[in-house]
Length: 123
Figure 1 (tube, rainbow, N blue to C red):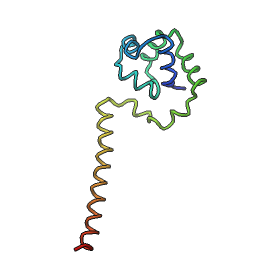
Figure 2: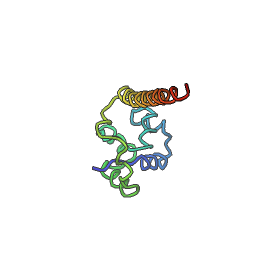
Figure 3: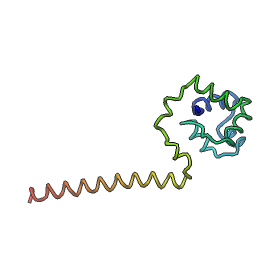
């Protein structure tokens, strides 16, 4: 099943003369959700897709088909794992911090090793 490309969503929104805020209000989501979708893709959530369908006067299948025709779906590969779509914002932040924390810890270990090697040579 093809996802709706964010660029297509933006094109539809702008074509109807809607701001991000106006679209968000019409489909009962946050402005930041619409912004995020326009940068990637619309989530496969039946309620959201049906609301977008009503706002734009297109069936969900028509939106998917037109999105795939205009933008393809190749760029969507590797952006978000399907299981990431089920994470809450707090869980996403925790996962992101966990990765950053691992990077910081790795950098600290590298610095410690560098000092352990260089200090005996200098002294």
